[in-house]
Image 1 (cartoon, rainbow, N blue to C red):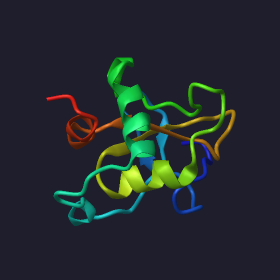
Image 2: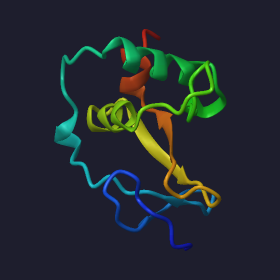
Image 3: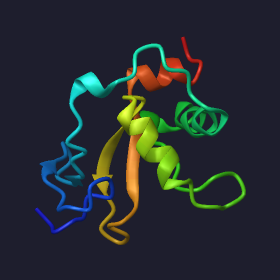
Image 4: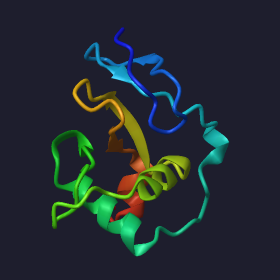
Length: 110
C-alpha cells in the first residue's frame, strides 16, 4: 500500500481498493447518512456529473475547469451520497469519489 493521504481527515489512506489502489478512509459511521436531507444546488450539480460517468465517478473539476469545493465533496460523503474511490498517486490530496445508490437518488436518477 502506498503512503496516500486521506483528504477527509488528513491521516494516511488505510483501506485497500478492489483494483489494488489505496482508498482514503472517511471513518464515517453509516448512521451519518442524513435521511431525508435534500442536496444543495452545488451538491446536485456535483452528483449529476457522476450519473454521466462509468462507475459513477465524480468530477474533480467543474464545467468551467475550477476545482470542485472540498466542502461540497465532504458534505456529499458525510450524507452518504458519495464515497471515496481511490487515492490519486500523482495528487494524493485530491479526493476521487464515486456515487452511492443514495447519491444517484439524490441526483434525481430513479
